[in-house]
Amino acid sequence: PYDRSRRIGFVRALAARLRAHAPDLVLVHGAFGLHAWIAAAARLAGVRRLWTFVVNRPPRGGLPRLAQQAMAHAARPFASGEIAVSHFVRRVLVNEYGLPPARVHTAYRWRELERIERIAASVRRGGADGPVLGTIGRLDWMKDHATTIRALALLRKGLPDARLA
Image (tube, rainbow, N blue to C red; front, side, top):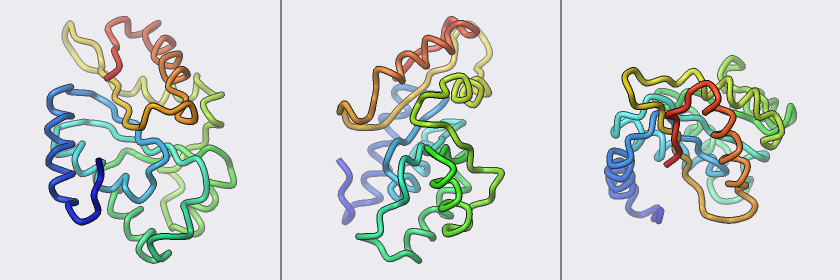
C-alpha cells in the first residue's frame, strides 16, 4: 500500500514486484498524481511502457493545483503518455495541466478496445516470450478488470504469447 510518508520505500517495493513479474506495459488506472511514483518504480524495474488511464478531472481536494500539475509533469520522463476517458478529461489535462497534446490520447471507458489494443500493441518483446501487460489497481468492480482481460484476448489475436500480470 502507498504511504505518503514513505514514498521512496513505496517506489523501491513496487519496483521489486515489477521486476519479479517483468511486464512490458503497466497501465495505471485512477491514480493521477500517484502515477508519478508508480512510473518511477516501473522505470527502475525496466518496464518499457507505462500509460495512465485518467477517468475524471484530477481531484481538486488533497494536493493544491500547482502540486498536482508538478506531479503530472514529474511523470513525463517515465511514462509513455496518458489515456483520457473523454474529450473533456483530455482538455483538462492539456489546458489546465499543460500536458503536451501529443501525449494525451482519448479512449472511452474501455469501450474502444481496438484503440487501446493499438496503443498496447506498440509494446513487443523479441524471442519466444510474448509481451507481458501489467495493471495496477485494486480488485474492485469499478476498475473493470474483466474488460482488461477482454482487451488482452484481443491483443493475443496478434501476439498469442501475450500475458497479463
